Length: 37
Image (cartoon, rainbow, N blue to C red):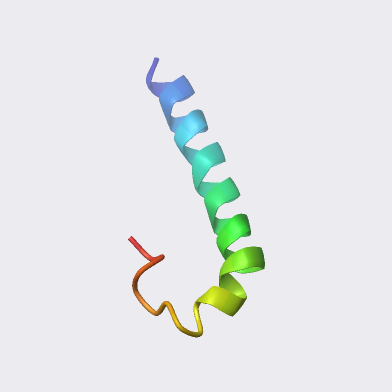
């Protein structure tokens, strides 16, 4: 259970990071800490 949870969490994290790097690059200009949790 823990392993699956960790894998899912890592997957979601990677996807969010990649998305933030691709889409957030432009938004970070006027959204400093709004997107970052």
